[in-house]
Length: 236
Ligand SMILES: [Zn+2]
Image (cartoon, rainbow, N blue to C red; front, side, top):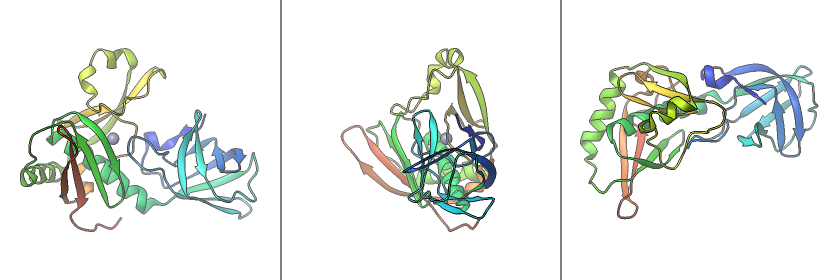
């Protein structure tokens, strides 16, 4: 199984790794910084460079069986056992980290069950199981206050049994945390939010920058889709 370096440090932009498999649709590594599509967050893009200068573009990253597949339309020049440098498209990933953390804030402000969600580098959304009208101004002001308060964002692990004892931690109805591995990763935004999550996040909420509420769409009688966008472009 691929060692997932992004889990302990989401800020790694590149790493050294060894190719463990080459397929028609991509390749596997012994360790990686590429986040695979999951939990509403898109897979990373980037490239790998071998010691003898072969460069291969990675146009997506996904879970494949029990491993992480780096999707590559052209794997010419790659071979099992090769040492490579893997490098993600950092600007895109960092936007995903800021957006992903922002969705945790949105979920903490609108305390309704979450039925779905999606992240891109420009905008993101959560679907809530709620019938109430969303006060856009109040929600926008509340999430921006949480950003400005610069809360620390941490991960920690608990056992399956500990999670079973605290079912209230799971607010995301559509995305159940993976079970069976014996432990579950929790994302904690100090005094704001605590829930199982395997995604990548920023270290402090101020890194997210100003947010604006986009459209609020009614999707059925008890479903509200709430969109957020970055209020101002922020460079990395
Ligand atoms: Zn998360």
